[in-house]
Image (cartoon, rainbow, N blue to C red; front, side, top):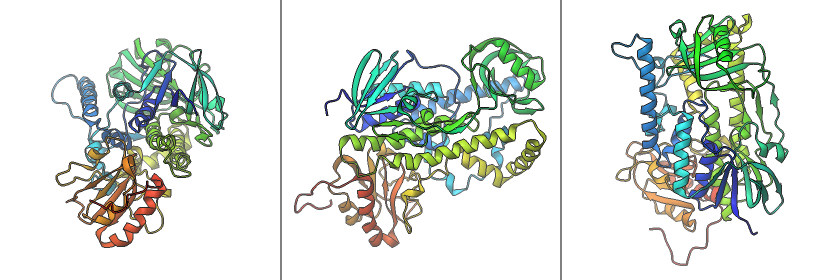
Length: 525
């Protein structure tokens, strides 16, 4: 099949750029098309969760993320100093700070010894990463990898057949093997592709903005529930969020004025605060919908194109990054011709349930935030539980994403690590596990110097790296097979090594296809 590109990605937001980087790491020729001429600076997501931090850490981006986080923390410190009158020491928030339906979670109550928090390594210390600087970082990374990004061109249509997709962009036609819609909640790719998009209609009007305020001292800091709605003030100077429960906006696309924001803030806060300038603002609703499937032939969806929901709990950006990481290596394997049968279909199978959970998680929060008697009574019950060690730990684990796993990866009797994010093991003399995932390939760790483990990888060539080392903190582990997206496909303890090694061959063929022929007489190093 003659094509201009292996893959066209519609949308140069964080999801599209993450996917493009993953494809390019695997040697796929990818074009990203974006209707905007510059990065959208509208205020959006303010943080990433643990799976997202792990994903970027495994690609070598942790130092850049840490620098972004420090800038963010400095802004938070400035806001807190203003709230405390501008003098004295500033008490910074605990390691994790979050909320469920505006109910604050006290980081001091978090059970940091919970084993689900133990595996992220240094990535667990990164989270306060706003969307705009993340998008700039990913744009630079894409350029470094040689991804072609065309800005200021709009995808207007496409024709898909059994051999590929003809994509119409910017007045020209581009032929590609595959098309992926990462073009947001109003996705053109989703609409033209005929994807079913069931869900629930919006019932609220929300605003988020960065503004200049007069009378801000009358506002409560953090999240506040009132008889007329909910509002948030901070964690940066001038950042506000309002939620009104009297229906969706009449015109979601109309320009957002200072008068509109001021009216909403006064309504829900009961104060006479004045907004004198609007620096960036957006509207949102609780429209919650999910594509019935993420693939239709040679057309796929990821990010908001596949699922939309309210921003409560900060799941949207992270859900999209998870989609991109899961899809990237599978689509690349398909393009390169070594994917085992059905590999690409596991994208929907693995990611759709997590997307469905996010929609339910956001719906539950909207229900608890409603200013009516039954919701307020239930809210008091949930708040009481949230203010316990068990409750704080439960909600934090959900919000942080450390609970996420792909249970369908595992078979009965498999090691407990299978299906979960790989622990960031410290390897004696060989760095950490994440250091060996920078190239986007799978990783087979031989932690017991076992020739049988290394022999199982023969013939897989550049589909995976094989590393022999020891993990002093986990001496019981004999080996791990880690997919390119960082999830564990096989693991074994030393006590069960002979039987588990036989299962390794099945895991390799399930995820990485048939090995190439090995020359006679070749053996493991």
